[in-house]
Amino acid sequence: MKASHDDLPPGEALSLARQCHAQGDPWQAVVHCRTALSGGEDPVEALVLLGRSLAATGDLPGAGHQLSRAIETDPARADAYQYLAEVNMQIGRAPEALRCYRHALQLRPDDIDVLNGYALALWGTGQLDEARSLLQRAVEREPGHAFSRRNLRLLDSRLVDRWHFAMVNDEARNRQFAAALERAITPRSVVLDIGAGTGLLSMMAARAGARQVIACEANPALASLAREVIRDNGCSDRIRVINKSSLQLDPEADFPRHTRPDVLVAEVFDTMVIGEGALNTFTHACRYLLAPGATVIPRQAVLFAGLVESERLWREGGADRAAGFDLTRLNQFRPDSIALEAASFGGRLLADAFPLFSFDLTGGPQTPAKVSLDIPILEPGVCHALVYWIQLHLDAGAVIDNRPVFDGEEQAGHYCRHWYQSVKLLVPPLPVTPGMTLRVEASHNRQNVAVVVMDPHSGALL
Image 1 (cartoon, rainbow, N blue to C red):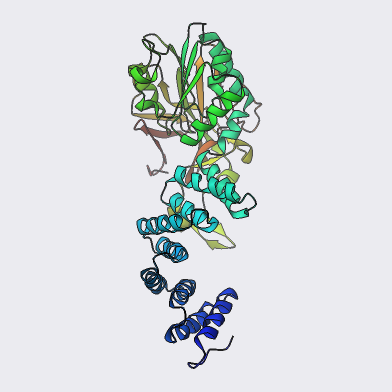
Image 2: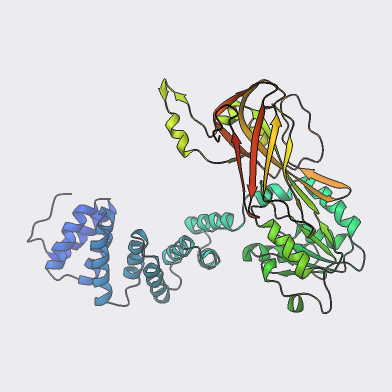
């Protein structure tokens, strides 16, 4: 597109500006917009298009200025508010962007682009439930709109993490929890399910004969889903879903009158046991929510570790040489730990596996905050990593874990596939021989676990 002449009629200049913008040439569109404005042709239309074109060239301050001028000229221009909101989001002015989107939505309540843009802005500021409501509205208005459906699906996957699918499909986990609940529950039992998720454990409790189940779920999307799932399975008469954190439960208001739960079930563990706040959750429940002597499922959680040789595993987060070049400086940015599915790496144990921490979940004594362990090496090799796994003691008769199968072993116990293994890589890898001892020091603050391995030769922390 050739540059316009100064004497180009304003109407023609504006038309050319639209064409240039549509064809991906915002720079020439800017030229034509300025020509149209100098001739007084439809200034609001030209200002809006000039703002959009400037934004496309990267001139965000200039774009914001022109769009603000358009709004001053015609406060009813919803598209000017919409484009100004987009500019404000790009320059980090989220509150101003949300204000602009609110104005645009008031002017055009059914506009698909405004609904999507506003939803994405809310999403970007962490207001996920409000964003989901707008995207649902957009899909209802125009079911075939591909981006509305895509955005809603993406947001739903953020509201409900993907691991929920693996968890509900973990047959070993489900079988052992169901068995433990059946052993604990009587026809008079009131069960508290913390972190109820889809309501699966709550429905197991109802099926086991519980008189009442209180399903506590802090995630609004999951709480709503749980109500629907429970209703679909005919359990609504005995299960009540409460959309709260268990730390916010009020026994007087949230439990049946003069009733405290006599069974607690909760699966609120991450790959290092306590990262989802499990210790505070269980301690609070035992002190403030449960009946005296209540059964707690699980009653104990143990974090195990093993020193492993696995070059394949080490290369997931360590660097040495590549294409003949030394890249070891990259290791200063290595992750402290990585999460991997056991099937994605092989390896062999160089020493007996050992427990780092054992957590009593029934309100018993607290676990020491720090341990120092000297681990005897039994096999020669190169120690690439410390691999962690968890073990849950549901009751006296049920134990589940996610201990990986190492080279030369067969799967044993009740392996739960939905938990990944967490791995600490040793950089640089450490050659070891039988008779050596490695010092492992582990600390926890009831929320996180930190582990260091010491080089027995230099005393350096690996």
